[in-house]
Length: 300
Image (tube, rainbow, N blue to C red; front, side):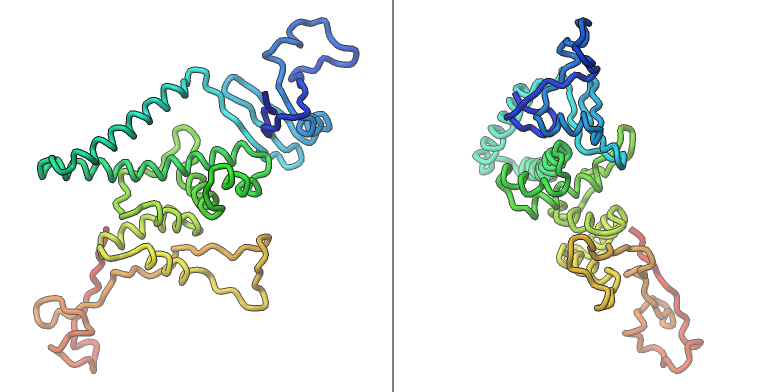
């Protein structure tokens, strides 16, 4: 048994959602399990002192900070979910991957291509599941961003990975039911998680991700390091006197709006075919009217 809010296992109390009032209550509904929540002493006191509001329903619990109305933590319930069946399926997938690795030398050429596509799809989803797991762990913590260090230790990963992956899910995938989400099948980038992580650190993450895909379509050699460099160059310049190194004053996020399209070039049509102006030898650039130019935009 543990506290349903913070997960503590010591100093536990039974909190009555509908209070039993002074002197107790003879109403059996007040003492029914559906009206009881197991809480540690610290969380219990914060609710009784009016700092937190606890909401519980069939779908889960939610704790709200009464001072600012923001969510402190939440936990979902789904009695129809059978985790043992789910983990059994994961074991089957792991076994299938092992068998596929052994069968590779015996596959036909077409089957190699099919297996590669399957492995790529699985790779896309594996990091996505990791991001969802880390984000969910953060949402269950009462410490918000400060909980990531403890989460990183528990999941045996670096603090940077815990922060980046939780941020990715929050920015791109944590949507209300019915809202549009990023379709991972449409991400055509190699090692898409690296691009998604980089885009999540910007002011316009979805636009930056689309920008990376367009650049990759234009230049297959476009790398995540080049993408990060462009993001860094787009970061607003901050005067030295106004810089803050403290986490309380983070640098302003870069935005894509206002950047010139990197694919628009000027072409000379004097010779009858478009030639970049920098390589045009058909005319002299003494008078712009001599050379008929036309901007050509490559749209993804």
